[in-house]
Length: 380
Length: 144
Image (cartoon, rainbow over all chains, first blue to last red):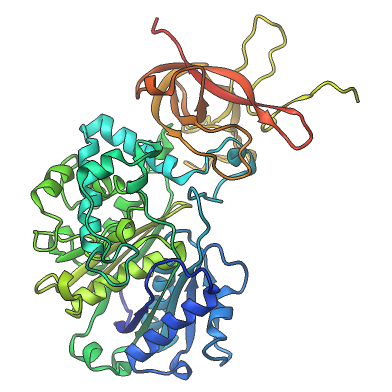
């Protein structure tokens, strides 16, 4: 965008994605808030506005979390954009600093999940009576088409799970940290929840929270944030629209492609410039089509590249290096921010055993019922 | 009111009520006379969200089409669901539009993308008052 000042990452905080049975969301989310303030070497009184992503918490949830840490009268805005809530919140925070309304803002994302099939409320009552709000089944619709059009197989989908669980195994904040790796056979034999989506394809329903502090250049404080300045190169949010293919077939509209086009235009960086990426995949098979929709390879090509190790750490384009949704688990309101934090860790060269050597530019894609697509490009 | 169960549609206005036993119900959509876009269910505001035209016309959709995509749900979803798991639903391409509907009257293992299907109005389940709730579904037909 023209005429905007540069915005930088000041600090991050994340609590491990797991069940917090004994805790209210304000308990573990306030921990993520304290962690990101400490990481930024700032205090609550430095924060001028807060944007909080959450889906199931109810009214005033960001206020509840923040009241555990401070009460300074600043604007606290709660943002619900389904699975892309905290990436959409990140964008609002970015815009507030970019437009010079504030110098230091915080993004929070947190969720306490229920059990069972992930149900969406973005449907009308009669559609829910018909059982149309089952998200694994709605993913399955696209996956079924993808299989019919490109001949993708169950083995291809299983390889996505294998890669992500392998990465998660080395990520202390992931649900599946140190839980071992999974084999193709284990995935192929896991039960079907909504054909062709299997149990091991689906991101685990876990609780979790994140915090990210954004600021202008002169407010950067910590050593790492100042030495390895990470700038927000683009932050784009698109929703459903009518496109050229859409006459009579509205489900063909592709907001991910449009978000990618806008993000490239704003940042000047295209798919070929990325050193590391985060791809949204609440159900593992969606990884393959999303990668293609964003232009990282040709349609129908991703399964082959995956098999060759192209998306692994050490491959040509490492993807979902922290384990993605499948490896980390999926607390809706925290997921978008968790994805962004992994890109930040990679650019700060803080990703430990998951480090992508020399990563300078990274992209984060998230989706949410609505529909929403949010793409964030960060560069060091 | 008698003791007999009433039949109620899952939502009013989704399909036509045949006036004789020879007629078969059809789904009711909206047609944009300006750009040709078709919507199901009909757009209550009469506004075409594609081209912006105001004044959509009601259109009866064809009863037969092909499965564009589908899934089979193996466990009970939310408490709002009135049917029983496992159940199948998907998108069906009709000659004049694409609709989302449940799939019925078949072994789910036999369902395939591209399969020919036709509309049926069938029991979905019962509501809190014991009424029989009807829904639009598609079932496989022999290719003709």
